[in-house]
Length: 392
Image (cartoon, rainbow, N blue to C red; front, side):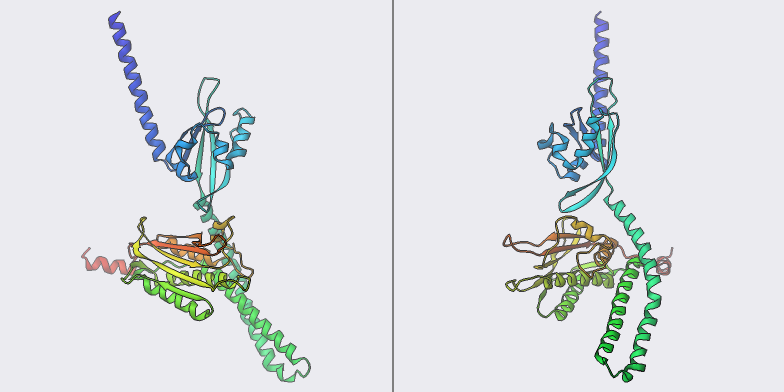
């Protein structure tokens, strides 16, 4: 009997050790995967949540355990409600949108049931952040649309403009009545053709974004140039550049980064000009280049701050997608192009509220980031020359 008890004890210890190893393995897997995982009981109360889900939903684990998931994440209310109504027979899978940290994210939600012989069992909710995937699909689709639009519209523009100018030269002197109306009509045609041409150029720029030709340089010059150009174009607005005294070295395409900065600063001046009311303070736009160079994420930060009309809270991040704009005559491509440029430089763009001294203050802070260190991408001919120089 003693031997039997010892054998059972050893078997229990071995089983316990195996369970403990599996627990540690499961914890390691859950903490390492990028997918958010939430374990809930049969009443939808949170029993387990991994690190990715906490970061995605910006939650504190201590404060949410044993609380109803629908209360903690209201966006899942419909999914969980449908699950509970059907006693777990139908497990919904769908996409939802959640807003956290000023950014709208697209989440793919799956719910699976625990394999248990008990009557009471729980469920596992997985959350996949597919925001970038959806954005890439939209960008690809819009790029194809832009390419087709540019091709179809650009061809007739030049003949229209040339015909209008020829009509003015040929028949302008013969018009004796309503000459002013005649000139206005011709000017309107030429001006509108020019506007359409500019729109087509933006379509082409978005559809055919060239690969950056990077080289080492000082970002301070690009910041100063963008601020100076807009200060000349908008003398009534104070456009300033705040840059460090020491060079801020980075590897970047000077033309593309200049284009991105110019676009963002121009948007800021337009937001300032759109303010209404005679008692509005003097319009200001400040372009700040991070004095310490890279931030904690290893990126260089450029902030463009204005005291203009500001941006809407709802769906703000959608303004970075193609053809999304708050301006009456905007094409919605400017910020999409800026985003693509910065992503090609290992960074990104954020749309935030400007710092406020008073609750009634308005304004926008556009944060541009790019990698502090990046490799210079060589063309095939340059790669061959470099290999030859190193004797390879």
